[in-house]
Length: 397
Image 1: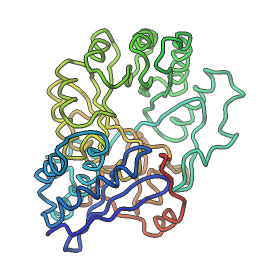
Image 2: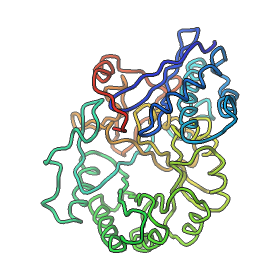
Image 3: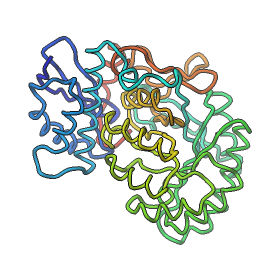
């Protein structure tokens, strides 16, 4: 089996999918995408394509290094790594199909058959959109809890996500900016987190993403949140300096999570060596694909770090992430993009319209690991045709 050519699909609302064709009936799906920079990644995919045409797609490790080292004399960077990530995903899908095995079985076999999911929570009720629409298209005033006071709105949103939608884990999103001015926000955010805890109930784990504040503000935020015992606190400083992250982690009783914008295994090694994080969050579409994220997961095990893959993109990226989650002994919880959720007949689906068999949230807030070959997914041809008729845009949906 040899690679013949790449096919790029711009998938609404804003995703980029790759279909790698071979000289057989087999093909592989991948997602080469960088938020708000799709055309740059597409150009890099096209630059890498000649390096792989004519090659055996099952030699995934060798092809990864061909792409990483080839063509320009430069390695790394978000555009190149996002292109490699999507191609690598498609190669693994092909390799699994050729072997007749799901990817997780090719990486050592499953440690679990179900994957715990979490959902974002804020001061609004959750909503759904038609497959292929951007998330904000589905918002309406009925989802606004403005009539409730600040903490009660968060409490009610959490209650609905847990007790009506069926999730059993969630993450509060807040933003403080990068300056020292938002000191007054610290107590307000802690109050919101306590309200989410109350609405979710005592058995539900709640994490918090504070979105890269100034490190001093992060320390204040950690101090205020410590009594509430979050599952983890995500990205408590700008992403550039591992040494400052290590200093924050050293003085925190809350597990520190980071890594969604780190590319490749090397920076994760540096962070783990410095005890800078307890929860690793590589993004499979940016960090180097399935090949690299599996290595990062294994590397983290030796440092007692848990895996919580970042995944704010399409259901295809989620399907690939779940293959890693299934075989990672140190798996913690899996993120997904709310735009991909559907509510029908009292059940929560993820990827409906894209996949013939979308993921379905069970009574424990988990989804089943697909057992089909490769990524374990088949495209819903009728639903996908309807999705592809919708407008596509460069800004992430």
